[in-house]
Length: 488
Image 1 (cartoon, rainbow, N blue to C red):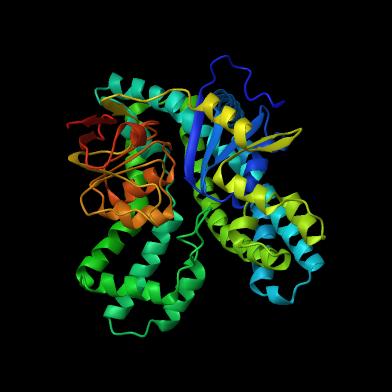
Image 2: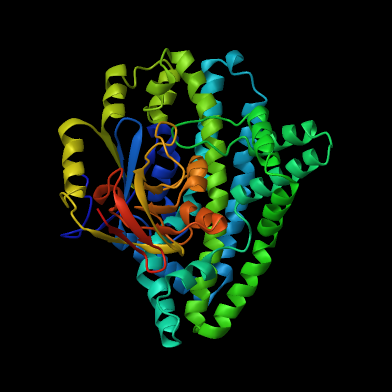
């Protein structure tokens, strides 16, 4: 293979994993290699490994740290430097969301191949454009561990507050409620209206139109129906109006109480100007990352509609066409034999896509295996104690349940949820969890935000939890110190 993956002798990889299909990830896979139009330094490449509708997204940690440090320096010198990029991103978002409207109002069965090709080409390019600057958020996960948490810990220990993970979690979380929290607030208001004997049918329809996307990911697209939201209202109504109003009041008051807590902590810690700018930067990036996630969840829905239409035109199933590259799709719609069913089957079973600013390769067979072996060289992990970043404090003991795909896996009330990373479709499991432990993520990841809102002990970024632990293990999660210890 001619592509050099790293200049480091012993590279340290930062890996995220989730359920996914190749084409639904392609816009951000290419986006990493195009971030140079916004940031310097930038990523040299992206590596994405696919096995049976599952992805490991691999980046070199040294690149993350260089990019994050450079952006922090720029933001420290000029706080408006990031806002100019955010303005560009918001305009790109408006353009991309107009594609949603176009697809929603189109009858795919009436489109010819050329019309469908033009529509897909515009959608794909707009998707890549809107995701490219927002990928900046990825670089700050290891930066939190290497810079923000240690610096805050110095201050907390100086004034007798112990380790700084919890304080860092509070200071860096955005004041604005996450989009999932806002959905919950809106649904609770509908529930109260229902309990007051008012007609809610129109409210349910509007709610479905606004939040149909909340279960979508890079593999499964399951738009929520009005009937499902109606079912949630019935479940909440069964708790009684007092309980519903209490939860609503707590969620609506969170920004105010959080702002006061942040103000008090900043007053006690007295961070220097650079650290203070870093804390503010994380708040901005956390909000950006949440908005980016919504774009992805909506985009997966509309991209799936397009891919199904393409598949029908060229005689391939959705599962097959979802492993073609954009150029192969354009070629197939033009009547060219750009990719075979055999190759698509190979890619779905196991492939590695390496993308640089100069070239990209979709590797299968022995070439793909060589990349896999190079990245996953640590061998069997045998640690008894696991450590990570505190997202929400608490100390509990319980039995482990490892969940990789909530659409397939079972999770019982009161278990310890252990996974690579959480996504919106994990929320029902998270609500039942005694604690949450993830391999990936940082202070602004999905698991961190949701666990704080649910007040469930949570440790993120352990790197090895799903490898060290197994179903049924009795563990102690000490989310005040960021450790997980096997008891049996």
